[in-house]
Image: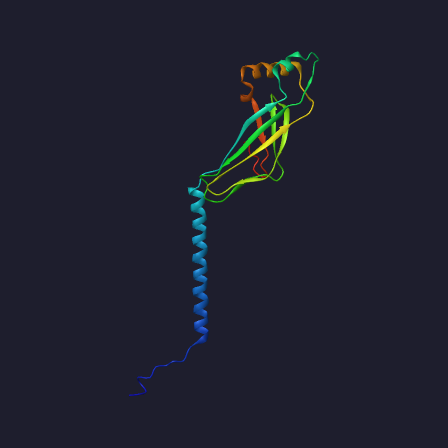
Length: 176
């Protein structure tokens, strides 16, 4: 009777190792699938960041001086202070940055009036970021009709609605 009740305590090491490796592979696959779903969930539930640019100051474009110039293509030297802002409050996936070879170009009726380099700045995840840039140019040649139109719009306070912005965002080609 003793022989029948004996338990075989001998361990099959190869079987134990094979099962351990199999369980480890299952765990790694489950973790990878969970990370993929989590990343997808972040992207689906996150909003896109919003990039805005606002004038905070304009100099070198006095309407009276623009109209007084009698020569056909008088030069102007404008200076624009621009506030750039990233609203990343709806983005759960990560911070968003502008910089590294980015610039602001200000133009009026296809005449480039100023350029400025953007120093890198970021908005944290679920946060906001802001910086200021000075876009300027020296001796920009403008034909008389364009100078007169700009001067009239400056006097009426309408010129800032007609500026064109191009913010170079590397890889995105975005306009802010």
